[in-house]
Image (spheres, rainbow over the protein chains, first blue to last red):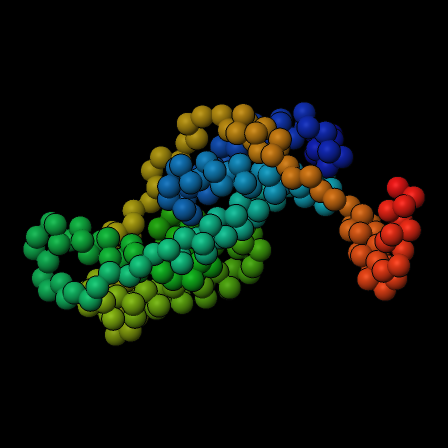
Length: 172
Length: 73
């Protein structure tokens, strides 16, 4: 509590203590969303940079970890929005029975790319809920939305992905 | 039918993108954080910008003050 007050008042030593205490947790949260440790390291620093800038608005009565997770989720979301524009969808190719491991690998790559083309907010919700199997309540808290909204985003992500895969001729 | 297709899509997504196994941070990021803190751009207060705008407007409306000002500088 005293540490959080010192951080909110702008003390760098308090910020360093919090950074060292929470950097692993924030990194772990971000890497689950962006799935690239190198990018996650950069985004962890970006998250703490935003945390440091917003220190005056932080209420020391609040849970620092939850606040950091929310900022981390926003940073990861911004990254996915930027990354989404750079991903090109592969050409249409029907897959058939896919007996060949190379073809299966290619299908996985296509699914991955199609998923990365979804709106960033759907990607985050679906990644955390379906792939990482995080509790919906925790996802909702980190994204600052209701549990119902998380479920809705996951549902829409799956529907959109299915349509994209159909258009690409990929049979899940 | 549609729900079954959604389940198949979920299954395919999980196979294509398995959970991240290595979630451990391998190095201390504090040195990188310190570099980032040092990179802070110089922030010009808003009233400095207002003053510049005021002077620009003054010179535009009364161009005659420019030579007088230059003479006194």
